Length: 140
Image: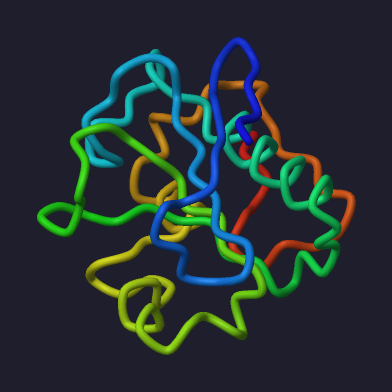
């Protein structure tokens, strides 16, 4: 199954770290999260696609979801992709280290926004229907 819109596409991870593990990929090529620039990516669109897919797959506890990126050199593919994991409290044992929030290997969307704030387009915002602990409002 694949979900798409004009900006991103989303699909199941082939090696899931949790019951729900999806990758959200921008259509425009961006090597990794360190290459994010204002003109290249909209994290709000990526995060909203992840939320949409979780909701469509009957996962509604957004306090137990994690959205993040691997930092180089721990990226396995040279194209930006957002990991959407849920329930985050029940990561598979072999994945807990790989997807530990704000570890040197894995950075959450909210941390990514604070480190790369010029990447956030003005007026772009993520409006949750429930609280998500790893995403903040993108308007800055």
